[in-house]
Length: 215
Ligand code: URA
Image (cartoon, rainbow, N blue to C red; front, top):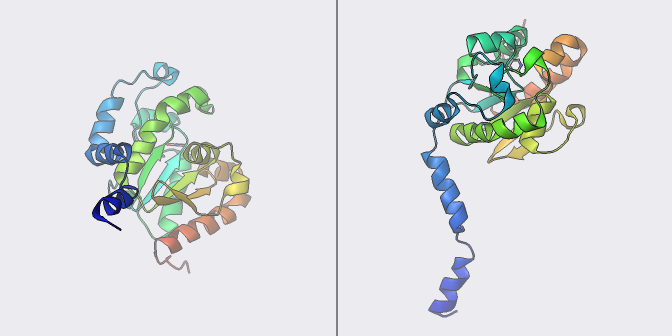
């Protein structure tokens, strides 16, 4: 191969300009930038009923990230994700894995409370999900746990049923993704807690966390 042929051969392996620009955008992005862009957000109709925008919280360098659906009443008042009844169960699930809540990062698909805790609607998810993707790209966890249908559907961008896809790891944005049941669902259906625990044990195994024995 002559020099000219060699250089065009290697061109095929170079990232496109678009890829380079995307990488640069991710590198220059930050949780602070995302928070400031969401300040006073009026991108969807949820803005009219919310008290606070619940951005998410936790270790910005977390290896493990949990994605829920949207803030409930308590979360809306306190401005923090998963602080109500479902949050207390999530805390116990995290602790059962041998971790503390402060070690992980917790976010929601929509950052404002849907009125009366109704399901988030398609247009609301479409407005808010780019911020979720950016949060994942900035934090760069090793694994993302999608809590429930809305998180799993938003991350996979597919109309999936949580019962069909839960319990398996999926490659996701350079990380892995584990869909499992939402803690609020588990509160209503405690018989599914065993399956959710099996899913979380796989997450712990992937992260090489030794699960504390419960005597
Ligand atoms: N349910 C969610 O999906 N997120 C919260 O923050 C609280 C309850």
